[in-house]
Length: 212
Image (cartoon, rainbow, N blue to C red):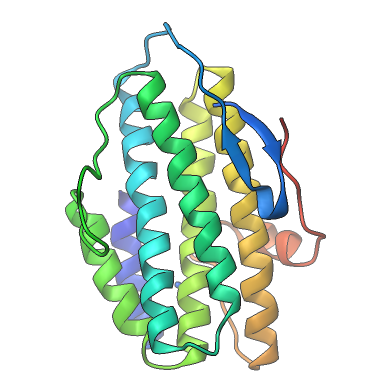
């Protein structure tokens, strides 16, 4: 949540970011239905609920930016990947008997007030230009990677760690795509959540694939 509030501030300063059964294109996954009897800590439950809405936020932002910039067709694939991420986290919520924070919320509507504020800020920024949309994408994936790092450090169940690890690999792939789009537009981006060294290592390395 600290990362979310920082995102709003950082953007203003810029003035312009389960188990898986098979991993396909961009870590496409099919959730594996199993019954879990382990008890999760409150921190683990909170992380799952938060990540469910964070993935929805990413999907909804990319949907909004596609409307503003229809020529940015690559966003459609990333948007589809974010939907799969949402589904994977929902599967975990169901397995552990945790209420879904999304419920029947429409696109662009969130239970978490900080995520709602971030969504509003990111969409407003990304609609300004294609370069701004790319910077928004990098910001989202930068934040996702860091939040997943934090969630992994709290996770105790192997199936949850596997999901988080695969989501993180997918976010890194998205970051690589946005970086390609950034350089083609002669733009620049300074990571706000992961370190500069981590960012450089990601964008200068090949695409990753998820584990089973």
